Image 1 (cartoon, rainbow, N blue to C red):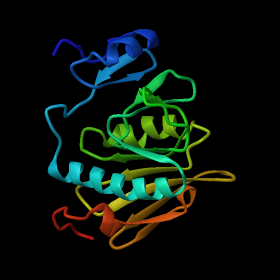
Image 2 (image 1 turned 180 degrees about the horizontal axis):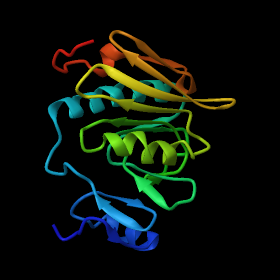
Image 3 (image 1 turned 90 degrees about the vertical axis):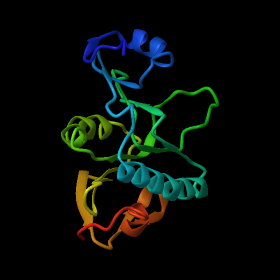
Length: 190
């Protein structure tokens, strides 16, 4: 791999070089981080991401919105951070050549041991700074547990879902069941 971890780079250089990079890289306030797992991910992670994408894609389409899985970047409000969420839903106008979305309504990250801290902390702060975002979901892959941050009139409220719960997603006027999220994933403790 030619890209060094934690490489300093300007936003312009990152945007110009990302599409030619051998690996996907995220950009955080002047530093580029090659994404882990480019050689592959776990079976559970891939299934969960796919299950969430399929469910949210249908809900998004009913609202005239779009869902993307893994390969669409999202920019933070200050355009100083770019992430590749596992699933992204946005109602912003589609452009065939767009490589970045700036107004997501729902963002989803599926946890792994190496990303859990970042997904719960840095990404939480970056994502919830986006004025368009209504729900941020963090999905465990080793147990049936989902943390959902919902935007309220007074800030962000977190709810934890497990077992056979269903998750309300008011921004999409939809409900997502944990059975749908974990469909075909090996049996887990509820």
